[in-house]
Length: 101
Image (tube, rainbow, N blue to C red):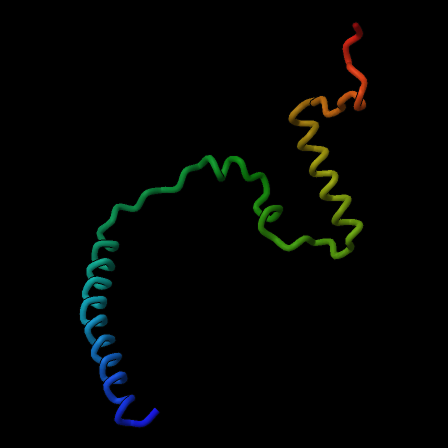
């Protein structure tokens, strides 16, 4: 693009950015000052009580063997299922009813 055509576009962008920063910087500083005076609220303890081991949910698995990882995932699922109690997942085959006429 020739300089005669690009100069007004560059000037428009420069003036717009200047205008935006003249408004954004004071608003950001006011927000920072307001944040300094906010009351600190402690976190709830319910999440801490539910987490038995922080490393279990947030760390990289310690076993790099895929079979070991699968065994661990199945064991965790079985422990959760055992804690929840028995559930019925079996359904009668198609065409058969579970009740007799």
